Length: 219
Image 1 (cartoon, rainbow, N blue to C red):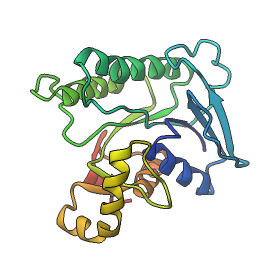
Image 2: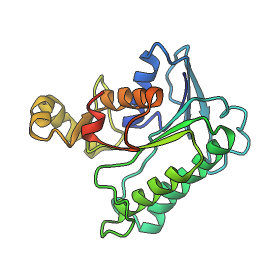
Image 3: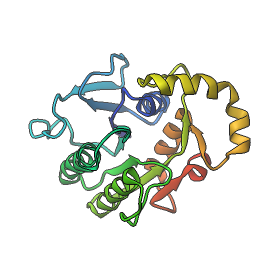
Image 4: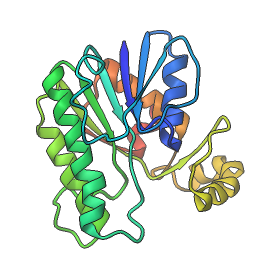
């Protein structure tokens, strides 16, 4: 299986990349982002694209993949809906539309979030925008598209968030992971589980196009 990964330098993306590189059936991983991952592995190729809104020069490099794992994302804190939409809906659909044109046999997996609003009309801004993004992705002519809606994601294997207050939170949460899982089984997952679940869904599909935390932790 050949896999494309957007957002490999982020916390979730690092976890997904780790599982892809460990998976025996993954032959090739293309990490696409504004910056290279800085990692070196025989399966891994970096494609640094300063402006992800413009992939016009990269059709050849982006062709021939079985799955795309899209883990790019920004916090909505302090953002206007217009700016958040630009970095969430507009960017995601710009990239996904190119990929759907290049290969309709691709499976596209998008990391959304617990509480996403599929109606697009709720009171919470980020949830509306994520819902609109999910709905648009599900209409694109991929072989299949799946929306992952994790709640709290605990980083494992030395992975760290680039956001300072996230790092402080996870430093406290990680030792408490077994307790958190017992108390909040429908809201807590890990970077390892995210990666394994994405790979399993890319290989075998899933009964629902939207996966909540309880679905993700089954893998």
